[in-house]
Image 1 (tube, rainbow, N blue to C red):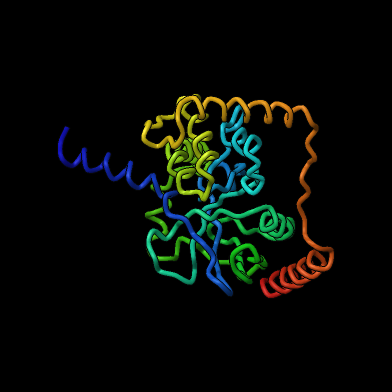
Image 2 (cartoon, rainbow, N blue to C red):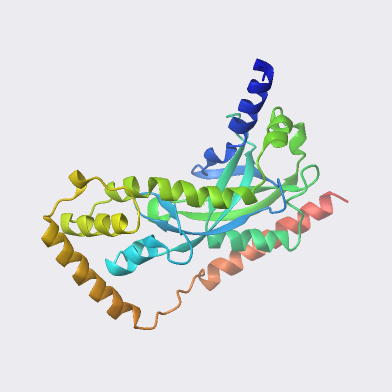
Length: 271
């Protein structure tokens, strides 16, 4: 195999990992265009938030077990959505990045999509992502903007051609989360006995855990795991309450009204 062929294959593999670049809205107004590559404009994953986000592994997920056994309610899995976007207010590369957003943003996007095309690369509308607050008080308002052709943006056409289809991201996200799970948990602020029991559980489930990470004697650790197992089985026998997600009626009405007015204005100006 020649150098040119090796280079071609290497660049192909490197460029297909564009999902390692994530986009995060800055405070205030942001302007992006959703980019569709593959069959899906968005993928839905359930994720846990430990020290950082971690994809749920599906049936038999060890993180789900950890959350229930040790009462880590803040790490309960939640729906997350991912789409490719181009940040229209930034020239940072790569131009096409992954945007992860929650169900409230997804619902606002659905309101717009029901009335306006935001997906077609050449003619779809851009969207405003307005970020209010910070930390746990962060709120987003999603509004439609003018149509834009992403292929007229320098560098986007080349990135788009080498971009991996979005549907490939879901499986890769799960594999990356498994590979970083031990480090993710070690970075959490956990009591030593809880951390020890979690590490033992991970070791029992096939994760590589070195003995120097364990903080209790073997017998103490075994007793901890037995106790946690009993508590887990008792809790599992109780019916779970389905979580509810939504916004206040006033907020929903105000956002919908604003979106509807903007869509009407955009459609009128395009005639």
